[in-house]
Length: 163
Ligand code: PNS
Image 1 (cartoon, helix red, strand yellow):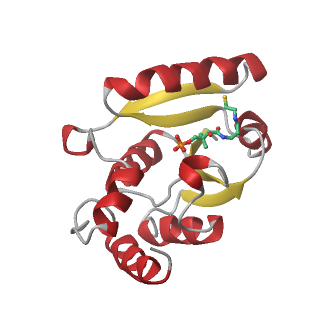
Image 2 (cartoon, protein in one colour):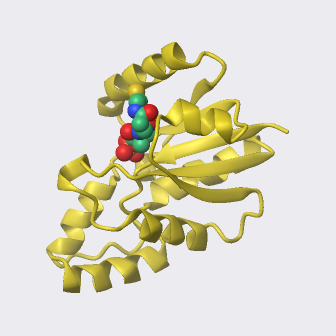
């Protein structure tokens, strides 16, 4: 059984994330999407970790080899305990490279039994990010096509209560 972890903050999950997870699920027997608490990222996530995990699980309900789990520890420890041999991350524009390269190297130093692999974003999603989606939504722009439909609905509801 070849299992991969696809980690991220996913605040919220975008169509770019979904594309990477779908492609990972075709390559591995089993994929665990690890949703990091990331309490300090970008001034604190808009969605709780439970909300983020639920939105991903709903959007990926068509894939029966994908599960979703929140985590609040070192990624390599989460991956190893989940029985994964690979960490799969999406890589967008070159601006991602330095940070991802650093994380991959540090993770390798922490545990060289878990390999980091990258799936490159398709051109359509190359410049798509969760923070851009939130900014567009906060200013009343349409995020349809950038995030799964359930996320678009949840964003609208969330921003009415937490601008
Ligand atoms: O989608 P993101 O927010 O860029 O994902 C970053 C994430 C969650 C993969 C990263 O912050 C992470 O691995 N957090 C867990 C804590 C950890 O292992 N940190 C050391 C990484 S070098």
